[in-house]
Amino acid sequence: PMLGKLMKHEFCATARRMLPLFLVVVLLSCFLRISTAVIDHSTRSLPTILHMLNALLWVLFVLLLIGCVVFAVVVMVNRFYKNLLTDEGYLMFTLPVSIHKLLWSKLLVSSVWFLAAFAVDALALGIVLFENVSFASIPAFFKDVQDILKSQYGFDAVAFVLEYLALMFVSLLAACLDFYAPIAVGHSFANHKTLLSVVFFFVFNTVWQILGLFGIAGVLAAESSADDVLRFIHTGMLSGISSVAFMGAVMYVITWLMLTKRLNLQ
Image (cartoon, one colour):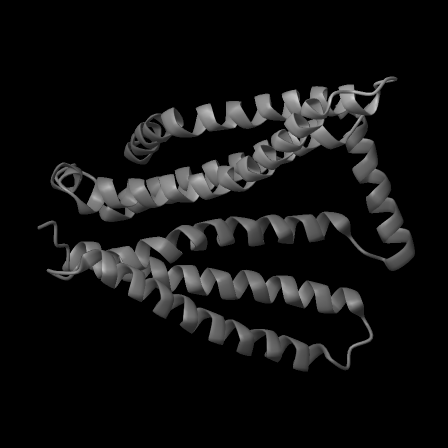
């Protein structure tokens, strides 16, 4: 119950920032769709200013698509920092809840906003790029893809989707912890907290990239002689899930230890 209350509070605090941005992205995609349709279907020459405005809308649209995801990351980092490592931390750590629940409330809410940002971007792209698309035809489309993959390659698309969703879930959690851990370590020191947070961010990421390269090399070496492409894909997905989950677990432990043993709110 307490985790649910923390998540509800987190959603309310972050929705005030995220929902207006989502609305702007969708509205801009609608304006861009109308503007592009007017230009494409016009039977007479249009003023140059209209083409320039349409081009400007395209630039703004692309920037907003990127900015939507980037802003979700900024909000996630800011909430963790402000809520737990500044003066607000004095209040948060007096609540009758464990640090695990504080962390998981932020991890889960941040992951939901990341997924929402991707979904809004996909919706905006669909509005701008596709014509005469019926939502009712989407299940039939995926069923056709499943049948083709299974008949041609013996590929179980459902299993692949489940593995992909698992990889996405652990990747979203790990992405949050990829910022949480360096910030928590950096702010455990008395001075230069922000600078040290940045330094530890690059140190941790360098370590994970090196280990990731060894992991990829290991998978390629183990499956290089296999004729079964599906086995290679399956092994790669499971290896990816395991390695990302391991990285996330290490980052989680580091974050938890810093907040438990070396918390410094001065």
